[in-house]
Image 1: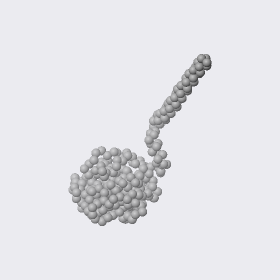
Image 2: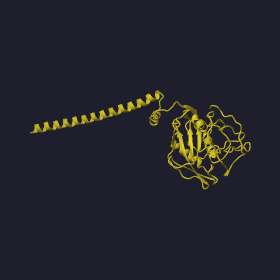
Image 3: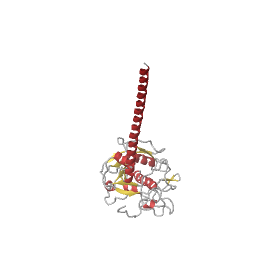
Image 4: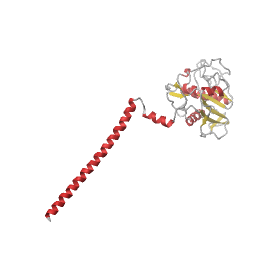
Length: 297
């Protein structure tokens, strides 16, 4: 009986030891698997870095889908500081990347922003507008572009600031008085009825045609301040839809009227993107300058 008890005790002890060895072995195997996975992931990241590939860019490319037509690359310096005429942070166009790629010729088809916004302005005639981006301009999201356009047109320094006009963005299924179109240079020349001009933007009937080349690059004499130029470009062309004609610089050293053709020259004035200056409608003498239109960027 005593032998049996001793034998049973020894066997139980051995079973406990074997169980502990198996437990330690399982834990060791799990740690080994985790180490292999960690090393594999780290090795993939290191390999990507050595190849000059940013994993974030790879994920972004997958989300964006296949590339469109061969793009033109427009270098856009990051704006330095905010001059007195620039939009405040709450209404300024969001910061843009250093480059915005776009084809010279798009498809001629457009995707339209879907949101309907609030009415901007405290009085005057209500004008409703849509916002659309030409297919092929793949790096501009139409909904984001729509929000940027709406923010600029709702700014109190804009056309709604003095009670003459109210503006409201609508979606593709609602009646609209005009459409803001972001187009490629070739499509711009077709919509504006001037096949020799792929540089400027225009208004033609109920179409406010914004040339993506100018939206991406701006113009040299705006001192690389792309946000200010974009506000000017949009307000100038929408101003034509509201019945405004071209104006001249009223005073050397003073702000240019928004209806001056600032894309082509300032003629002694300083850049100004807004119809309202110091809380009042600002204008210059009616007229045009005989400025040449650049044939290429």
